[in-house]
Length: 435
Image (cartoon, rainbow, N blue to C red; front, side, top):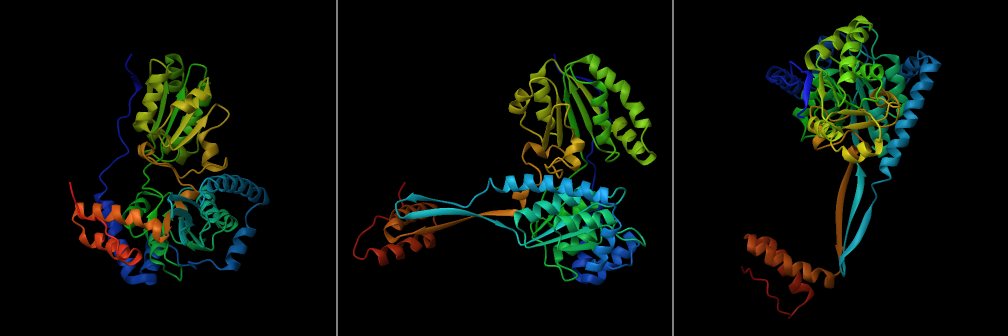
């Protein structure tokens, strides 16, 4: 049977961003022209904050002292998990070299970017986990300077838990500045910071647009949209756990899509029945986001079998993908489009969001069809090098000269001619173009 929608989304998470784009471009232009003073003015306007922007060592120490020891232990636990996984990822990239032809050696080096700018959201929630994910991976990659910025709260600054986390994970400077102005300060190298080579971390639509506008001048992790999550569940799945996991992701925002894909109608109908009660039991702000996301963006899809379920999932290319089914190895080998995969009831997207070790900065809005999420590799440049003996360069020069002349690039060809004449005087070479 063709897949059936037992619940169909009435809205999509894409929207006209022309107004956001115009606002962001104006702010970026103002800050690039006005420097520190302009960034501070926007901080006063948008964050209602007049305190110190770059936290001193004493301010960091005072903030860390406010964090309960139990929470510090939890943050250290999550940091250690993310660090260990990042170190394992880094070990998969090595400097290599090989002899291409006799006398010609080519190689690659993995070089970390010099300066990373990590954006840590701090609006509705204190995004401790985002500091862990972004700062830790930059540190493991070997970036020489890591700046972390987060929106300050009026009169109090950055929440102490975020300060402790950024400091513990290795941030060299911590900046109390949010939104476009925070992104701009890191990109332009304001307040004595080195200009960032790469900007990473989640944020609202203005932060995402600022990163998009700056891409090219600096690197970015990705252009992120609203977070999304898909669950593949066979009839053996526990409907309460499935429903709870769906609701856990709707609290991110009113426009955060969640999808259930199953081959069992009874399971689907039970999940649909359970979700409203789970949402109603949430605190008010979480409840409002979850209710809107479930009402407007959620879908429940009934498929004929697991192959159709997998194909449906791949077509959505979700940011987070959970499998609650039998034969998990089959699903691991079959599925190809996702940001991060959670296999079995014993794990959940929420683990990945906070503490399991894999990164939670992931591709959204279908981008998982062509890219993965933030990793230690995002901070590293894979560059190449070459070296040759004179004898080794001979066949390269001959082939290059003829190819260049076929292309009409005479100056390129002459770079070979001059070497052949110098290294092999008196010899003749056929370096003419022919078809």
